[in-house]
Length: 386
Image (cartoon, rainbow, N blue to C red; front, top):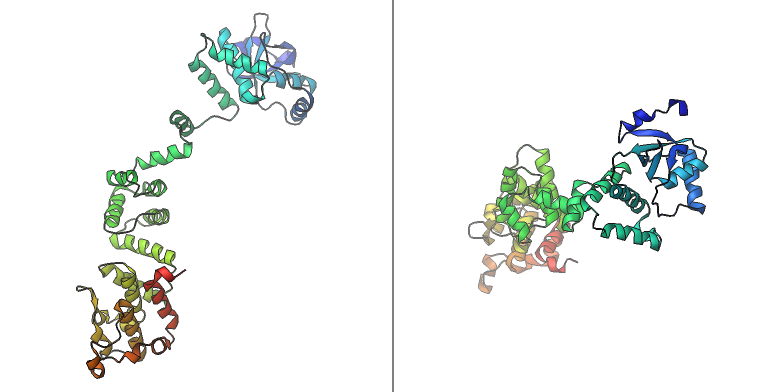
């Protein structure tokens, strides 16, 4: 191996990894750190025998042709015990005394940690950091170089986070918040829009963000994490989305949260269409919208059952010619859940209107739609739906 070793080539190629004979390596002249012994040394020897030296040592050239070890005293010692003749090394030229000392100290700190050092070694580290000749900028450069060599280099997010006392994930989220339109940034500041939900929306194009802002500005509910994820996914799936598309996403999420059971797809579609036309989205409107869109019969005659303009029921709708026995039950329950309507305007008009007996639980629920009637009751009284 000595025959192939060229000192001149090595000395002209700083920072390149070269294999240097162990007998040409000298301990750092002011080395104050104890070498590994016992089990820790044995483990390192076995590791080197099995895998070689994975992390090159760092050295600087001496006037006598040898090299002084700055980083890697333990690896060199273990390699010698393991029977190796050379070790991979990175050569550093033209270092000042302080710079060489920094390499020695920073590598020991990096590999052992301050708390694992002996008291005298900790004193050495602190004295070096406290020295007037100490350069924090140079120390930082060396620390970053060592991190890269050891595969521990920090990302830009981590470095920025350390500068402002933040975790890297928090930095990443704040950078995404900066992608929001001004109106949404104001929502974040006012805590109307949670930061994590804001991150999801930040991936939506600017025109999409404006649409989301306009839609939610007219709603009573906030943008939560689940809604924002669904909205982002929709924008990534489809080229264009309109207000109705967004409202459907929001409604679907709300229905999933409320665990609403629909009779079929047409029922769900009819309910979503009607609830959007109603003036409010409270428990009263949800219950009646659910019932008068339950089947095709009522769904095709919603104008006979509910006045959207006046926001009230049309009791005479129960007597329309299109009504069937089952649709009448559905209409009666819808009216009853709306305002406790029981079919009569006053006691004297019983024979002219719908008898109260038609509004009993036994009369209404005795049909195949009973499970869905129960759903309507749950929508009307959510406070009891535990």
